[in-house]
Image (tube, rainbow, N blue to C red):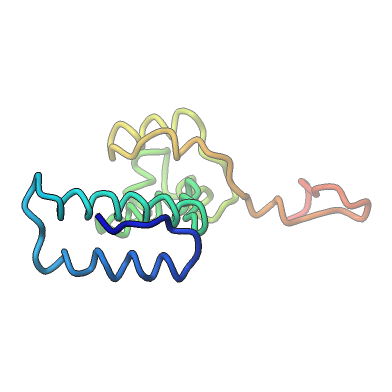
Length: 139
């Protein structure tokens, strides 16, 4: 089996070219070609995870993407979390999701709770007062 470690982008390009041939003609399970394909894809995944990580979307982006995929509107979210205005506040990053909101979204839409509880940025986090502290009063 002619497989080598992936140490740089040139090695990655080589490995990607090697596995590409299997896309049109997948190897039969249990063959040396299938083993080679598995090893190469594992190496590619490990290298890309280390050198090109993709951050998970924050909770608001996750909800936004889910709603877009399902054709849901902000009003649909409002029905779950306490009204259109509350949904607007959450989606515009003016209000954090509460545990109760997360539980309702998780139960109704089957979005995993773990990514919904991740910390995320609110609009108010951008405002600072004259002393350089977060300004929670002004709008």
